[in-house]
Length: 250
Image (cartoon, rainbow, N blue to C red; front, side, top):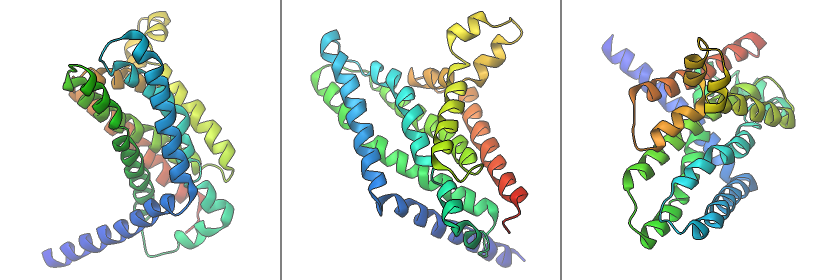
């Protein structure tokens, strides 16, 4: 029985890995990956260094202030096609009739996009390396900032993936993802929390993606922030799976 269960688990992960690799390579087999990476690096570097030399301080804090706003536009551009394109081209029926589970397909799409986003972030390491070369910089906020960026990006991706499953129009998927991501980013903002009723303030602060990112970007990794991101990601991946089941593609 143990051997059989081990084989079943091995087959499960092998199929998921095959789907994951297909999803990841689909980015690099088209101009999308290179346009996204170039846009991310050019926009991020230009906005950061535009103020860096004016301030005259060897700090990367401003980059991590800008990053959530850059993600708001660029991450929905990654997710808008993940389900929408499958539905528009009619390949979704074929994909979901393969001998794989709904969870395998959802996880493959999610981790494929997450690895792609992580690769993009790794390429941006030239920015902190340049700043470190110019002055004495505390490594803690840099490490925390990149960990927070991966977690925040994963949250945006899970949300965008869910929204992409609701429509076959990529533009609609992009706009809806951007709008909902913006809402989750802003509701934890200090201005929103300060003007909200007292009983709502702690709830809004906890729900805000931006507030948790700011905590980690300071170099302080708190358990509540990890739990928040883990719960957020799981919730929208689960909702994605439910949408697939409800549509009855299988």
